[in-house]
Image 1 (cartoon, one colour):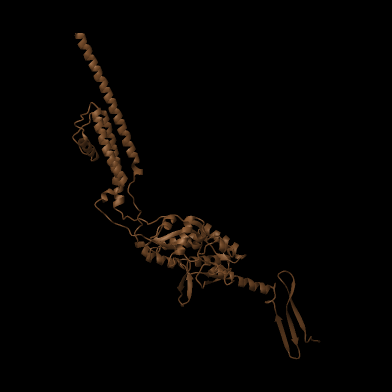
Image 2 (cartoon, rainbow, N blue to C red):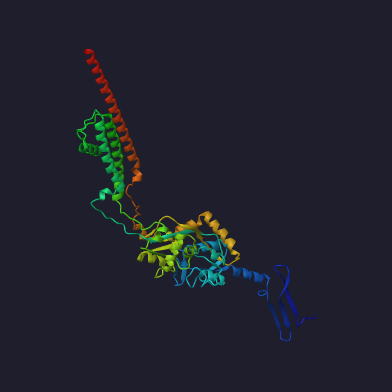
Length: 481
């Protein structure tokens, strides 16, 4: 029986594209009694082994992020290793579970979000990590801007936001004085009420002079004012009106004072039983005009870039102020900005989503006004042309539709136990202005005009009656002669 010695057998494989590939060789050496199989299927392209390894490797994504509460926060595990938790970590876990990938999370070394370095093509922060190929994606509270979009791709936002102002709660004044009882009505209302009292008293005097049914001696200036004051206080004055015109005045004055006293009483409790709190400014325009507070944002962040490149005069003025203030008003993290707010007269311009979180953590913080600048969002950053962009975008949209994002937000945006002891915010109460009671004065003026017209009619009627009476007497006297 013949045996084959010193043979070579080539191993071929049908590649994934259907083309045969020589992936190895089998050798035998009879003299040395050696048999050897050499395979290269792991190194050659388009082989099944190479493709499987590549797919397995591609499923492990390097994710860069930044330490920022409540998005990514470090914690120690039981074995002493550093792990991370937070909104973005939970979001990554759910994305990995639904899209079947693994990830390795690490924190960006320079602690920055990303901006061009000295105007060059090189970027810092998480954007720079993606451009250098050190990371496959950046999952953090990173905002989409026009300059960032030129160099990397972004998914659809997973959190919607704008720019708001964070400041320390102003001291609530509890001052009081001898004139505290005047606070429910504004100065203009008190002034017009005094004029209305004098005007009504003069109307009573004029009507008493015109109307034949009234005694001008009884309703002089002092008695008329006393009569109106007694109506105001719901007390008897000892004077009774006989004419229709004066009764019209009395009725209108009674209605006027009834409603005015009711509004005074209602606003009395609102103004005097609460701590009066006033904000030094309530808009970005007022912020730019005042000098008591300094203001700033994260250095190199999207908020800074918003004011830096804005063409609106108000925002350009704010940016100029931020640039020229010494020491610098820019901070590196939200936590640093919050600490400056608590320790200084400093207003931190920040994204509204992060601001809402800070309000749940400290009673001494408040949002300035209700205006939110812009409409932006936090998104996941990826290299240009990444095959993961569409998958991640669809999954984020699905999470938004199913309420997963709201569930994650409610998990991390919750009040601390210390916040439960905070008092409810008190709304600022203001004095009742003239614009709220102007209708009363119109009613009073209309009533006085009607009463004067009635007095004139009474005078005319009385005069005609006297003239007719005189004519009758003259006729009787002439007939007697």
